[in-house]
Amino acid sequence: MKSNDYISESAGTAFHPQVMEDTRLRVVDSFSSDALEDDTELRAIVQFAAKLCGAPAATITLVEELRQRFLAKEGLEERETPREVSFCAHAMVEPDLMEVHDATKDARFANNPMVTGEKHLRYYAGQPLVSDEGAPLGALCVLDTDPHPHGLTALQREGMQVLAQAVMRRLNARRANLQLMREIEDREDRLRRMIDGVPTIAWSADADGNFDYFNRRWEEQVGTSPPKVSEDWRQYVHPDDAEKVFADWYEAFNRGEEFEAEYRLKQSDGSWAWVLSLAVPVTDSQGGNLRWFGTVTNIDEVHQALEQRDMLARELSHRIKNIFAVVIGLASLKVKRAPEHEPFARELTDVMRALGRAHEFVRPESGVVQESLKGLLESLFSPYAHSEEEKRVLVTGFDAEISPRAATPLALVFHELATNSAKYGALSNETGTVTLEITDDGSMIGMRWVEEGGPKIKASGEEGFGTRLLEMSVSGQLGGAIERKFHEDGMVAAITIAKSAIAH
Image (cartoon, rainbow, N blue to C red; front, side, top):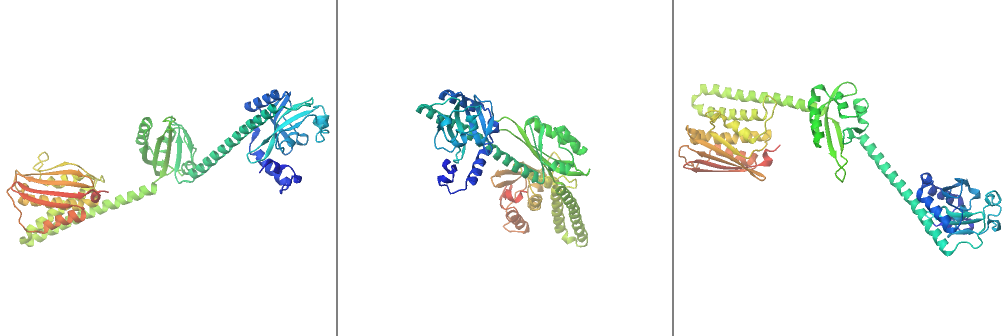
C-alpha cells in the first residue's frame, strides 16, 4: 500500500477513507511507541535537524486518531497537540518534503490556531515518515515563528530525508523487537501450556539448586506450594527412602551429573506413591550458566504391578522346584521296584537337579536375580569340585548377562558335557580337569571346552540321545553350533552361541 493511497477520494483511490484510516492507525499502534518518547537517538536527530535547517524547533511527530504526539522535540514544551491543528497530518501524505514558507499566506493553514494564536507559527518543513507497508505515520519537521521566504537548500532537503530514514530505522527496530518479544512470549506460553499439560511434575533450578519453576502438576499431585530449595523437598519423601535419595542427589548435584531415583512421594491426600525422579544438568552454548531440569513421574501402578509379578514369579518358582522334587522322588520310588532302570533314573534325577540349580540361579528364593553366564556355569559345575578351593571345571574369560529363558538350554548343554566327562572323560578319575574358556566374538560368544588328565578316549561313531540334545539345544535355542573332537588327552568341544539368544 503506497502513501498516496491515503490522500482522499479525489486522488482516485478505490477504498473508503475511513477504511484506509483504520488501517493506518493499526500500523501506527503496531510500533507501541510509548517507550520511545525522549529516546536518546531520536532526540539527537531532532536536535541536529533544527541545526541543519536553521530553525529553533523540531519534532518527530506521530499522527494518531485524535492527536499528534511528539516522540522527540527540540524547542517545544508541549508533548502533544490536537490532530485538527496538525501540519504533520498534511505532510505525512505528501510524496516528498512539505515546506510552508509563510503559513499566513497558505490557504490550508492561514486560519490554523497554531498560526493565529500565541504560538505564532509561520514556517514549517516536514519530511514524511512512512512505514514499510506504505502507511503514513507522521513527519520529521522543523518549525519557526518567522517566515523562511527562501526555504531549504537542496542539501538541507537531502539531510531531512536522510534523518527521516534514520527515524524509521529506529521505529522499525522497535517494532521488530516487539514482534520478536511477542513471538518469544507466544513460544514460552505454548511451552508452558504444553509442560503444564504433561502428566508428570516438571521443574527447573539454577546452578545453586534454587528452584525457579514448577509446572502445575506439583500442586495438583502434592497439594502444596512448590519447594524453594532441595532440602524443602525432603518433607515430601518417605522417611525410609529420604536418606539414600538425598545422598545420591547431592552427589550428582556436586558432580554435575545426571540423577535418577525411585522413591515414595507424599500425595495431597496424605498417601504415598512411588515416583521416578530424573534430573539433568544443562549448560548454555558457551559451557556456562549451568541449570538443572527435572521430572517426577508417578509410577505407583507400575511399581505395584511389578511387585505382583515378582510375587507370582516367586510362587511359580516355588511350584517349579516342587515339580523337580516330585519327579526326582517318583524316579527314586520307581527304581526301587525296577532296579534294572536304575541307570536311567540316575541320569534323569541328575538332569532334574541340574535344571533345579539353573532355575535357582536365575530365580533364587531371596528375590535377588543373578544374571551372569560364568556364575551360572560355575553353579552347574560345583558338584564336580573336590572342595571350594579345588575346582575341577575352571571357567575363564568373557562374561555376559543372561536372561531367565536362556538358563534352561545352557544348563542342559553343559550338564550333558559334564555328565559325559564324569562317565568317560576327565572328570571320571580323581586327577582330570576341564577348562572352559569364553571369548567375545562380536555378535557371538565362543566357548572352548578342553578336557585334560582323563583316560584315553575316542569317538564311538554313534550318535546318541545326548549328542542330539546338545546339537538341538545349541543350534535351536542358542542360535549357535557345536563341534566335538576326541584326542588321546581328552575331548575338546568348540561351541558358539548368539548373544541375542541369551540377552534380556
